[in-house]
Amino acid sequence: MASQLGLGLLRGLGYLPLPVLRALGAALGLLLFAMVTDRRHVVFTNLRTCFPILTARQRHTLARQTFVHFAQAWLDRSWLWHRSPACIQARVTLSGDVASLSDAQPTVLFAPHFVGLDVGWTALTLNLPLHFTTIFTPQSNAVVDAWVAKGRLRFGQVRLFRREDGVKPIVSALRQHELLYLLPDMNFGPSESVFVPFYGEPAATVPSLSRFAKLGRARVVPVITRMTPAGYEVVVHPAWTDFPSDDVLADTATMNLRLQSFIDAMPAQYFWVHKRFKTRPPGAPELY
Image 1 (tube, rainbow, N blue to C red):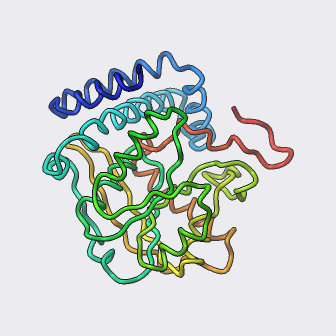
Image 2: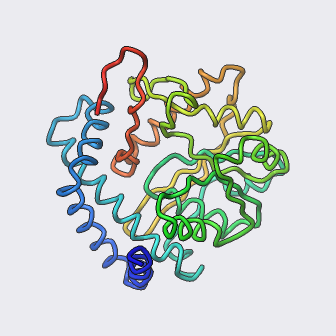
């Protein structure tokens, strides 16, 4: 019941003017920054590991901004998943190499964990008459899980795969030119990962981008979403011409290196609340 009431309130917030909603998100983010000490420790650890040249004050400022953007993006789902297509199109711009996505060739969309990741998916599925798939991670709360799934199924011709579905149906969809919106920059434990550098620190990284691209005989196209005062900008970047190679480990290291350049352009909007370095190489000290 509490979850249903909370989602009902969130839906109502979607009708507020965007500047008001963003101000509420900023206040919520600062409150979370002050109160959720364990997650604040995770963010500080990630920033200290990845940006050692920053001063303590600079990392503190960046951490606060991270919480603010995270909370704002969460509240933005109130209009993203409940307001009209016209409202979304007024607040979200889709630009870059969009036309190339209509080419009849298998495509993996590299969509890293920036706070606007659901906006990128919505912009593509709302505006393009193409078939899309993505891999859905179930939420622990059943009510929230159903809400998230419904929001991601809202527009277009889409399918949500769950991790337990396995690789075969995803590759089959890729070969049938269903675009795979993939978010591989997470730590899912040692059994599914390889260790490659991320900002110079060994990070357990899922090699799925390289493997899906190779199995699906697909190109890789980065799709990066940036939060702005007016809403969001979703940019489709040119396809990588040298990916995948015959070396999964090298490909995954390349992915992380190129991800760093995207993060450096907007570091406060990356998902630093995730324990990116939770899984450690044998003998390496724990970071959290």
